[in-house]
Amino acid sequence: MISILQIIVTLFIVFALSRAIFRFRDKQINLLELVFWCLLWIAAGVVLFIPQATNPIARLLNVGRGIDVPVYLSIVLLFYLVFRLYVKLDSINQNITKIVREVAIKKKK
Amino acid sequence: MQKTFIVIAAYNEERSISDVVHGLKKEGYHGRNIIVVDDGSNDNTFKEAQKAGATVLKHAINRGQGAALRTGMDYSLKHKAEIIVHFDADGQHNPKEVKDIIQPIINKEADVALGSRFLSKKSDVPLIKRIVLKMGVVFTFIFSGIWLTDTHNGFRAFSRKAAENIEITQDKMEHASEIIDLIKLKNIKYREIPVTIKYTKHSMEKGQSPLNSIRIAARLIWTKFLR
Ligand SMILES: Nc1nc2c(ncn2[C@@H]2O[C@H](COP(=O)(O)OP(=O)(O)O)[C@@H](O)[C@H]2O)c(=O)[nH]1
Ligand SMILES: [Mg+2]
Image (tube, rainbow over the protein chains, first blue to last red):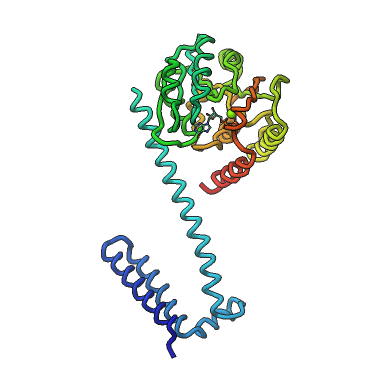
């Protein structure tokens, strides 16, 4: 029995996979990144249709249900991404300041 | 006399900047050496400073006091400054005390002179401000290992050597702590000089809120260990 949720998520995964492939073709991401995203989305698809597949991992990591593993992983990943974003923002800010300062001095001459 | 430049970072200070510039001129400083950095103000700060006869630089957008001071310092160094003074635009500092703060630099007793409102009894510091400032003193001791009486005072003077050596990277108010951190790190000779800070309704309304200090501390710790 396939649920509505599974259909929607499957469509999304197909869409995400195609995005990754297109971005690889346009050289916006490298091969390693492509492999990473493909594995991630394929894993998501496996978990979607066979939730029990995560149980061995759950036993290994000592968490209640297998489905909890991706939830925990997602939180860790989100923290990491927010951290990256903050670092990026910091360096963008520094660059903006550099330009503003340089223009101010050049204009004075 | 050594060539002294006074750098004033100003953000929306149209009401006070003119008096500040005139006050400094009355003490004998030429407009050529009074550098106002208008930090993307959305009022008439730029025009007021220019009318008062200062040398005015303009940041196209607001980048913070640290960034503006750095711009003013770069400009001053380029124009062969031998001493650089930081001075507030909101009228809290006393132009008559510039000669006191540059004294240790002229006498070669120090490369940085830091103003302290707690060394003289004349500043009427509001209680909350006093508490926050003392917390800043303790924070600085833990953060940089240097004990001062007043760590967050915007009135300072640098010798040319020190100005070249102390590179401010913090755009906003964190620069005050950063300067002290660099003094310690680079082993620069410093001196605290008593100064008077005037507290008016205008300056209190516009000044830094105590809550902002928490943000500042967090950012300092972040950049010290993770940048
Ligand atoms: N360039 C620049 N200067 C600022 C900014 N915010 C405050 N200032 C200036 O920094 C000085 C001290 O700031 P203030 O908020 O009064 O700090 P406080 O006196 O410690 O409460 C004043 O001369 C302000 O004009 C800013 O965003 N950019
Ligand atoms: Mg103030």
